[in-house]
Image 1 (cartoon, rainbow, N blue to C red):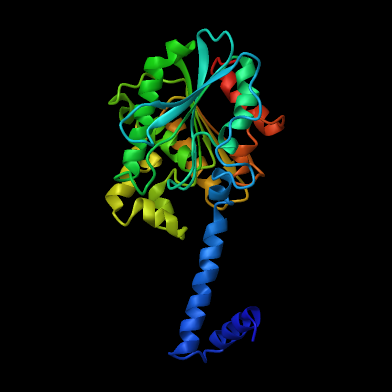
Image 2: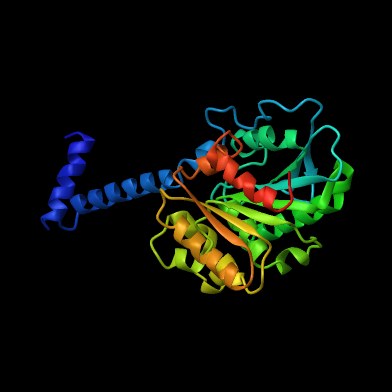
Amino acid sequence: MNRRRRGLFLGLMAGAGVVQAGPLREALRERIEQRRQARESSGIDGEEQALQGRGSGGRTAPVSLPAGARVLRDLSYGPDAQQRFDVYIPAGARSAPLLFMVHGGAWMVGDKGYAPVVNQKVSRWLPLGYVLVSINYRMSRTAPDVLAQADDAARALAHVQAQAGNWGADPARVLLMGHSAGAHLVALLAADAELAARHGCRPWLGMVSLDSAALDVVATMESRHYRFYDKVFGRDRALWLAASPYHRLHSKPAPMLLVCSTRRGDSCPQAESFAAKARQLGGRASVLPVDMKHGETNTDLGKASAYTDAVHAFMRGLGMP
């Protein structure tokens, strides 16, 4: 009996209530677990594969830099080898706006230099005079917890703002941006500015969250979710609350744009709830639902499209070019 027929047979047997303890039941459990793992591995839209650069050469430089632009790689903001960032600087930068990018990867994988993270953003915004910073942070296997990852993002931001003048950038004209896990981290800083202020960060202009499904961590953990969330957030409700942007939001935040994929069941509802709470506190918050895959909200940002134009319109509304 081939694997497919065996799986169908076991499923029919289970449905008929005739699978008893023993080899058949164990085989059925194994098959169910295999299918669950397959769904989970594809459930974040192949994000890990995209971030690891499969099919794109791994850690690659942008396809092309504007004339006269330069890149500073692996600058340090802390003692850990993962506490590094890259800076993309246009020619003649002076009091330039700065785009601060935090990559995704389920809090477990990813890199600041991967093509899907930076290529299109460099192509779109460097010619307009932006400085782009892309950061790494400790992954969940080495960070004490997810709050330490948020601390890394804050430490990186403080360091970048302190050094911005050296690159021709204005430390007050900063836009935070993150995708997926990175979107959760920048949303956490946006929700509770004290998390950033204690590291010496200055105020920023706004924040763009690219398809986070962890804006309300408590809601995520109390509903059906992918197993990797358990690895990141554990079972301690106190950590869920501390790591939840929705629950950390108690005062007027800087303006924010929350991009969400309509192809997912959790992203847009959480974005709407988070934005509504921000508006109740006097903040300016809007939601941008898009009919795109999760990964595309990151990789396609910067390409000529209505989606890029909508995000750029938010940025221009902050006084950025």
